[in-house]
Amino acid sequence: MANEEVIKAIKATLEKVRPFLQRDGGDVEFDSFIDGTVYIKMIGACEGCAFIDNTIKDGIEIILLEEVKEVKAVKPVSEKPQ
Image (cartoon, rainbow, N blue to C red; front, side, top):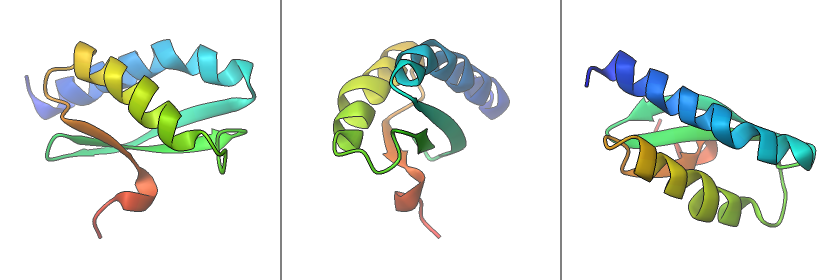
């Protein structure tokens, strides 16, 4: 799959997750896709939440790994290489 198609699939999958986060006053924003890793920004109530690592690893990452075969990991944008 071309990189543009992968990004489109990632964004579509994040749209499936978004309502669950919004229910608690949070949200997720796609930042980039680099070498198999999706970088996201957690916003709203999710930003700074004590459960942010669980939300990313046990929620968003699991779903993206299942839905988009090119995805190998999901990390917060703060871990993005410079």
